[in-house]
Amino acid sequence: MAGETVITVVGNLVDDPELRFTPSGAAVANFRIASTPRTFDRQTNEWKDGDALFLSCSVWRQAAENVAESLQRGMRVVVQGRLKARTYEDREGQKRTVFEIEVEEVGPSLKYATAKVSRTTRQGGGGGGFGGGAPQGAPAGGAPADDPWATPAAPAQGGQGGWGAPAAPAQQQNDPWGAPGVGGDEPPF
Image (cartoon, rainbow, N blue to C red; front, top):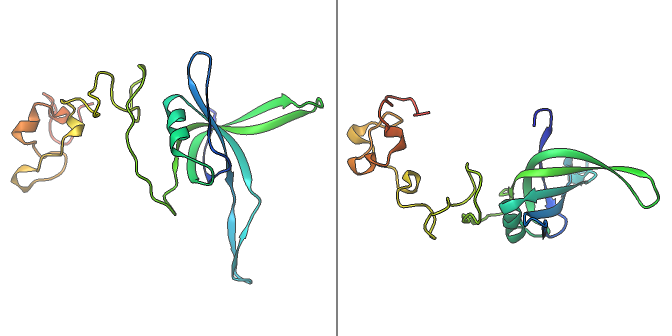
């Protein structure tokens, strides 16, 4: 992915996201956003809208299903992804080039709105990392019982805070930071 143009765009959804599935079953959601620059004209004491930039966006897999379920026309969103140019031939035989975003992250803008976020459970296997929902085999309620991140942080003993604070005895058995040979302020990776 070196050399690709990664951009972040804030804009409003022009249409409701359109969710489709490939023959192999992969979900893809397509949507368009309009990003309109605004400037303040001090002479007239008014805001002036510039020319809108319309961009087509596509997002894949579980994120596509989440987008289709969560976002709708008119919502202000923040989109981050790779800008791609695609060339095609129209009905009249003219070559056209369009710019599209292959979305990595998308969410509602909270500048003028609020949102309630709920975590989804993973439907299929594959891929680790962050933001994929509960791991396979996890109980329906979310994280597995031995998940150290699902438990509240233990209070620091002796009034010490920070990375070097020892964990409470009940939590030491599941503490990933308390691995043998790991000491002081260094994380265990």
